[in-house]
Length: 156
View 1 (spheres, rainbow, N blue to C red):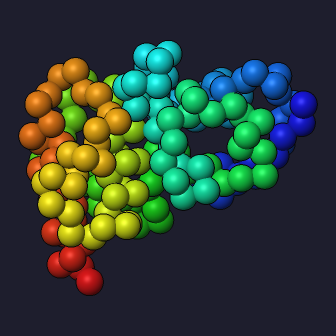
View 2: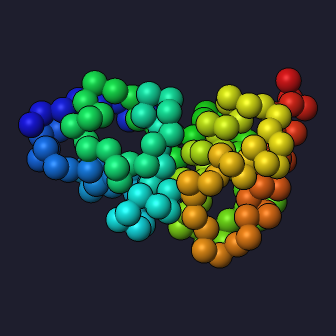
């Protein structure tokens, strides 16, 4: 079937099998390998992207379901001025270790801060509850998101 999807502001039209998952469209068809494919069970969250501004696990969405919609991936976080504040804060506060879960964490964190500019630690942890990091206890991830929130508040 033919689908058209806008990914990070660029429109793509592809012929895909109806059973193709969005994560595979992004990685294999479009070459956007920042979105990681991890667990095959929708538990890890490494594949989180935005579908029309809503975070989704792209391993649970068929590419056909994205037809006519907007997708934002981790590659779409960086702007003309450079890294997004969330990306910058993950670097500064050591919010990543092996990096496998990081794309999903970044997308979830950006969404959270766009909707709740001054989240509490509990709210951050709740937002990340669908993300699995096997390397950390989430302390530096939470610290990174709090740093990004504080930096953005300071810039306003």
